[in-house]
Amino acid sequence: MKVLVESKEDDGLIAFLGKKITIFCGVYIYTGTLVGVNDSCVKLSDAMMVFSTGKFSDKTWSDAEAFPGDFYVQMTAIESFGVLK
Image 1: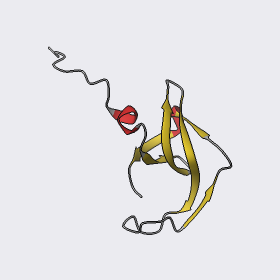
Image 2 (image 1 turned 30 degrees about the vertical axis):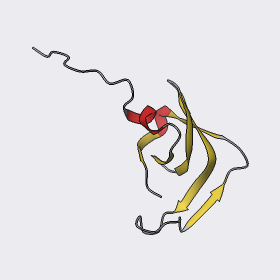
Image 3 (image 1 turned 180 degrees about the vertical axis):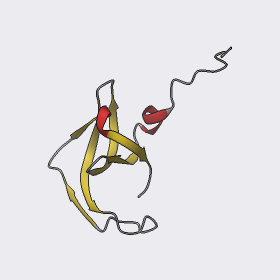
């Protein structure tokens, strides 16, 4: 029998609200400050599309371009996410 021991409401993407994160999708990589999360998408401010990461230990992206405003990423496209740079 499986029994629920603990439930966390602030885990996953919600734990990163207000932080600069990187989101890996099937084709593209996005980075920016996570300012919104709902069932269908996430909202990034100061968002950029990363074309080349360079070394993860570097402080800046090798090649990235900023979007002119906020940017939304569909939840179904997200493969992984976290704080990198």
